Amino acid sequence: MLTTDGWGCGSNRRTVRENLPNSTDVLVVGAGPTGLMLAVELTRRGIDYLLIDEVEAPSTFIKGSVVSFRTLEIFEELGIFEEARKLGTVVHAVVLWAEGRRAMTGDMALLDAPHAYNLHLGQPYTE
Ligand SMILES: Cc1cc2nc3c(=O)[nH]c(=O)nc-3n(C[C@H](O)[C@H](O)[C@H](O)COP(=O)(O)OP(=O)(O)OC[C@H]3O[C@@H](n4cnc5c(N)ncnc54)[C@H](O)[C@@H]3O)c2cc1C
Image (tube, rainbow, N blue to C red; front, side, top):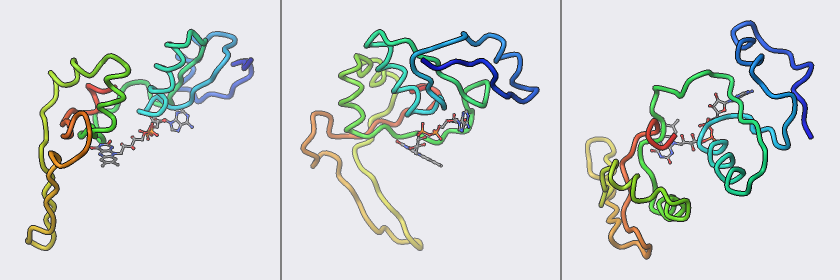
């Protein structure tokens, strides 16, 4: 059992800290893709947790814009594949350019996978 008593917090975080519960079974630090995925899995297992992040709102800077074919399989397990598929754009090929020349082309259709493509879907949607 973790407790939130006695935490040192900066002045801009104090308002949020006042809303924290006194205890939890799992403390997840960081609400990026890793922390959010962990939170989803803890929720599915009925385990009490507290998810915290040093920033108060989701980032408007998009890091993750492509959801890989393997992640799409995990989305299917989570029951969010259909929704993601509707919101996103299917990417069938990847072309890499170097010094003005086409250096590589990757044909996703050649993948041995249930969803042989990547999905272009911005981080604000996946979060
Ligand atoms: C420019 C760029 C483009 C990318 N594009 C893609 C892409 O198209 N597809 C893809 O799959 N991946 C992409 N990635 C990689 C992807 O962003 C990372 O793999 C992913 O964000 C890692 O998730 P994470 O949750 O581990 O870390 P992060 O996304 O870094 O999240 C960490 C979280 O923890 C919080 N935090 C950190 N320290 C503390 C602390 N001490 N206390 C409280 N909170 C804290 C941060 O505020 C943040 O919200 C890209 C990365 C970059 C930089």
